[in-house]
Length: 68
Image (cartoon, rainbow, N blue to C red):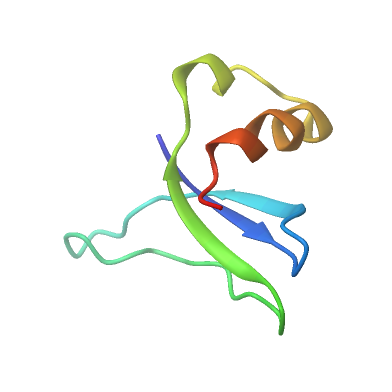
């Protein structure tokens, strides 16, 4: 599953969102817009993290999967 991960200027995860695609091929249906100093990363959610429902736990475990 593709997800969007928003990080702040220090690399802390501030939000995540499903990376769904729209009905017009490969065009995103909706994509988060970062605030100044933030970045959006588009990653494949590791299978072992798909069942996590607690955002704090997900954010902690996702950090190791983001580009440096």
